[in-house]
Image 1 (cartoon, rainbow, N blue to C red):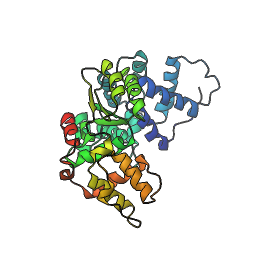
Image 2 (cartoon, one colour):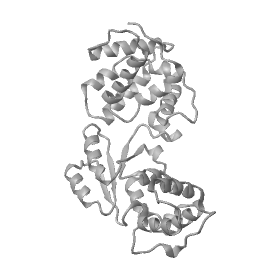
Image 3 (cartoon, one colour):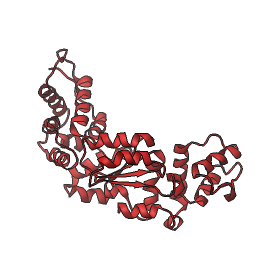
Image 4 (cartoon, one colour):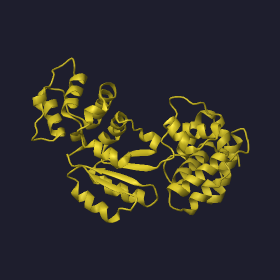
Length: 319
């Protein structure tokens, strides 16, 4: 069959997609279909069997790189599939494809725009060291050891930042935070991921998520942990003084809010919505404020600022 070679600038995208935290039958199929659609110029491609698709991609892939007969990376990914995911026969067909990943990785130059999993593959290929040691040494998150499943973007944005105040780097530990997209999506996300992954979960829920807790508990595996916040929502973990200073830091050319604007009778989100309305800061947006809070904490806070927060209890469980 006729085909075009894969251009070098597309190599990082392929390597990223091939090594994400998904079962191989999902990630490889997506990449293989993409390669066939983009780079095959043959007209007779209808009703290809899986074996035919794999053979075609192997031909396109290996013709696009300098063959070096090094399948060390392929073997690593196959071993991690056994560790992280439930058995799937298609996954092993894809993982057995003799695409020369090492040859493609050799063409990659590490820069700030590369995905962490691509940097991880590059380090493995170049240094041939223990993959877990490489994760710790370069803070690369891969291989994944635990999934921190949380409700929304605030937790996803801030967990790593707050943990670092306590000298805990979740990337070095291999803990990957995943935002479910809202309280009502957590159980659905857990059910779906549980079907294909063996990797342990730490599920973090707001205090009022009793109904979600009841949905998850009957399906909770022994390796998984479910934690219901005692303080309320994730924003309630953040000391008031830090929230106040963050608002005034962001809106320093406008009005300054005061500590008394925070009422003990309201949740922190309710307080923040009130403050934004009171001072005319516009609509309070949780995801945007989480990024602003992240910046303020990184530049101005220490663990002593959080020593009385419930976050300390969460960190003890996850350490």
